[in-house]
Amino acid sequence: MPTLQQAIASSRWAQTLTPAEQRRVENEISLRSVPKGGSVCREGEPATHWIGVVDGLIKVATVSPEGKPATFSGVPTGGWFGEGSLLRDGPRHYEAIALRASEIAYLPRAVFLWLLDNNPRFARFLLVQLNERLGQAMAIIEHQRLLGSDGRVAQCLASLFNPILYPGSGANLEISQEEIGLLVGLSRQRVNQALRLLQNHKLLRTENLGVTILDLEQLRSFEG
DNA sequence: GCATTAACACGTA
DNA sequence: TACGTGTTAATGC
Image 1 (cartoon, protein in one colour):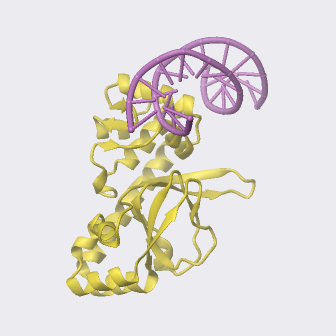
Image 2 (cartoon, rainbow, N blue to C red; image 1 turned 180 degrees about the vertical axis):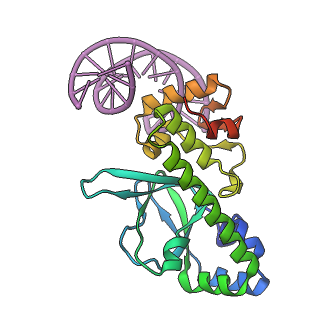
């Protein structure tokens, strides 16, 4: 169970803060334990907080009117999201579900905007993050319809390992094959098959609980 | 063909 | 014991 200080220290943007800014963040941030399958935030509700994954794994998705889920991306430990809805000051266009028991941090909108207005380094961090997300979205659009299941698994893992968005993770990520399946919309067995194929191509190594990336670039451009 | 569910054995925390 | 993994067989689109 992480403390407030550990939660803040694990976030890269926190290192841009002045002592005074750090104090305000510590005072106003809140932590919540979300059980596996629990809701982190709901589609349609007003965006009141910036949301960080202190520990765990969540997926960000929408549900179509027919009930079909569409996953945008997974967010592992160390990731922060929801800045788009905060900047627009509108309702969230997506929901977030915990894929495993997770510790989630909520930073109030007022503090987020205050940091954005007063700290250029924080603003720069946000720009880099937004730009990186845009790149991810483009990659999804470009590949989604062209790739088979193996390619989608490769893309999903490559985005989870994005060193700019999620610096803490390193080359190894603790994620079960079932969790990957939930992210990309495939069965565990099919994910297992895709992982073995990618392992044969020497792009990654499967471990007992998780995967180690050997070649992020090749993984990102894998087309099957 | 391709993916899914169900079922089983195996290894590890 | 509980969980994740590797594998196979039957079923559906």
